[in-house]
Length: 107
Image (cartoon, rainbow, N blue to C red):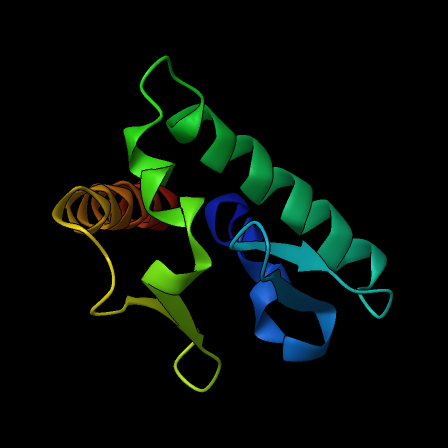
């Protein structure tokens, strides 16, 4: 596995992670292996560099749990009909950022 792909190794086993419903983000479980833990740290570091900015708009959609759901089967977040327009735009921005991170990791 390449270094770039190593940052998503932790997602290869659903027993190693879950969604923190309050924060709307991934966290590792006690079942995560040492390699999965290192992979998650790398993912978090790379993801953090994308998300840590003065502009918190990409994570605005997470402010209200009624605005989104998590589809475990598809391993993805979805917006609900209760989400205001700003939250939907924030979610789209977050998705673009996530896609750009994945593209960089694939190189």
